[in-house]
Amino acid sequence: MKKLICVVVMMVTMGCSMANPSSPTPVIGGAGRIESSEPIGVLVPGTASLWLAGAADGVKANGFAPGEGVDVAPAQSPVFVTLKVGQVYTYLVGFGCVKNDPELACNDANGGDPVSHYAGVENGVLNLTAPLNSLIGLFEGENQPFLLGKSGELTARSGKLYLGTMDGWGWFNNSGGFAVKFYDGK
Ligand SMILES: [Ca+2]
Image 1 (tube, rainbow, N blue to C red):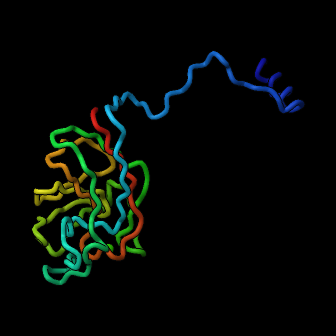
Image 2 (tube, helix red, strand yellow):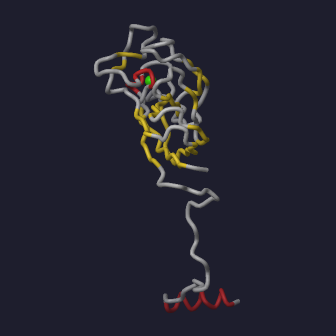
């Protein structure tokens, strides 16, 4: 009844406030997570290919077979985040979707149907079978890419984590991207 009166009064005066001054201030983005430092944010474009991780400018990759590269560094090179070796991080994709082809669907970071890298092992990076358009990673000094998806936890096995998206070939015609945050601590 008080609410109804307030609404009626508000309609007349446009000055009624429903706020309760004793209410606690809401905590935004808490969710039980204890953060020991600021999160590391990065944008991963759909054109980022792990098969060009660390490659010099001009190096090619991602054709139908090794040596038939249709992508080139740095245009389709992956992005990376700098992490503390041995530290456990949680990560979360805040928003975004990726298309591996202008005519196909835009997938979230968990991706669509599984696909492998058509050219197989290339530029020292091993093959991977992972959901199409999913978020994938590769630690510097390692050669096996792995699925990250929309969220999870990892231990930094090196100080540099390359980030890209999954496709079979030709990252040049991909679009979209993922906004990712890494949280130091659990
Ligand atoms: Ca593509």
